[in-house]
Length: 274
Image 1 (cartoon, rainbow, N blue to C red):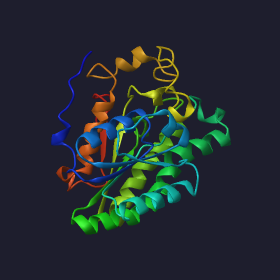
Image 2: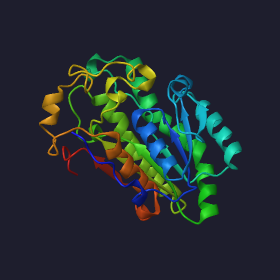
Image 3: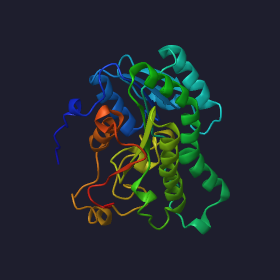
């Protein structure tokens, strides 16, 4: 199926908007960066050094290496961005994450649980802690609320067998965003996207785990799940592509969503209706 490209100009923040994308080398992050640059936004991508090396990003994008699990990584990356951009930021999109091994909770090791929580939830806390002073300064300069968008998941609400740990981490993201929304209003807004399955390397483990080099096939797409069975549960009859996610992200960052904070947009073709 060939889908038309959305008119992102109607959704995006204004030209010159300063946007940081953590995990920006993943499938959604790369497409978001490409569209944002095309719309005139200033973009910084913060991701693993290996991911930054593997992927070519648009000219003019600031790149900063970090490991989402490293206590000092986010602080160092955002300190570098503060030096480059005068200490101010208009938007943050936090995308790091990976799907935990598809196992019943009782079969998971403590190390597997800790890793799932670290990459999917703790990383958001570390990024926010580093970025908030810049977001507040950005709001003071523009007179508009800065925006944060976090990648949760439909699995935070529609929990499936073998997704308990991942679902718990993503439910934590939603709760974290609500807390941040109340603590930082009116200067900073915080919202979530909660996608269903999206056709990216994430379904095969993530860009930091070889998912962008593993051929896609019916056995591992989505990882550990039956593709045909999943499609049967989606009223719109397909899984998402990256453009389906980029549009809502840009909307939540923009002044078009200026009266939205603490909210979650479920993007799943109707599989979950909240």
